[in-house]
Image 1 (spheres, helix red, strand yellow):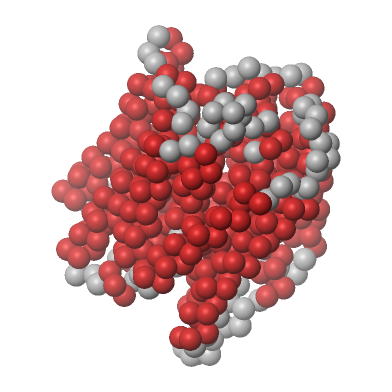
Image 2: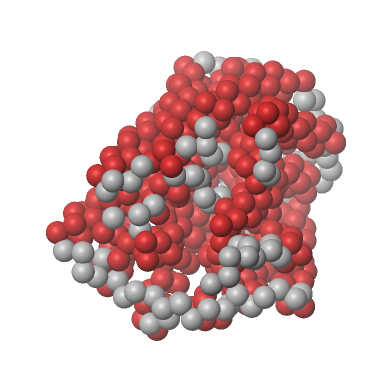
Length: 533
């Protein structure tokens, strides 16, 4: 076997990362779209969060159908058609979803808007399933994590500029004080459909490798039953909620407990008899799946409920912010994820210890400057964002202390996130706003840490384990409306205590994963973060 390292196909990689940008762009833009829909359709906090449920629920449904379809056909569908063609098909599905948004808004139908977002995200689900291993295949496997970190940085840039651009289209101009109209949404999604089409054509006519391979998949019928069980729990509890007066808070609590219960019980059965369970026989993967569920849920929930919080009279201002005044704070939240991920991307470059230290201090403030400048171009007063630099300094110290070790990183950032959420809940004004926004900074490094820890020790089951982890993006569909329901019955500010509990849960899950790996004689201190989202 040759020991020569395969060179990275940079032209192909630069083409590929365009889809990473749009995943972040659309996901972060929901933070602007949700408060608009809440006002326009007179929705409760819970009902407005259904936008996120439709979007992130599509990831679970899409991943589930791909897995079950591949199991039934006895071959991996994405591998069979190739990564390139799978991304093109995914883009075509997203184009359809974007175009459906136009008649949806014209009909003034919130339900049709949910369907549109669901279809857009269904396309994203297929794109993501293909794009992440595609990025790894565009060079030597040992540098695959570097390419994913680079792609993750592009994804984070999309989450940063998304709220600003969407705010522009909703309000007609960068500084408009006018109320948005459905026609503005039509313009935005028509442009999105056009951009998706352009990217699909670029992929079609580019000289990208096909990405096909004949890798066989292991038949894991018991794992399939577990995922179907989760789906049945979701559909069953939704049906119960539609036919009874059970409160949304209780319903969603039962749903979360059911999902966690199915996963824990599945692993308990797999430990007794591993036949037919595949990757689910490993406790670290089960804990990781729950952790991904919680992580994505809390990351999205902080943002999706933020618009309603900022509009609350007496929280930040006496009257509460208007809809077009909240984008800079949402942009800074998602920008905080970009700051953290850019710090993580420094490891791509083989710098000396000194230069690496200097870069870790300088790069976050370069990212912060980009966030401020983007909002400045919008015509926004950014002076109240300057002091967030103190939070960034805290983050830098935390990341340096973590030394890129996943368990250590998770323990540090989870603890800081718990403290931040509690400060946010028990204060008001800019201190509270900064505290909640800092959740994005601390979330920024969680996905690669959880991912790396969860797939460690899986051996031949690593690919399947990765697919199972992707299905747990489902948390973004359930935890935000759970917090919204609590906000309806209690108040939206106090509902952020849910975020503190989520981060506490992530801390506990990290310790459980560490214990599981230690029981398998795996040294967690030698594990490096190896994936980006």
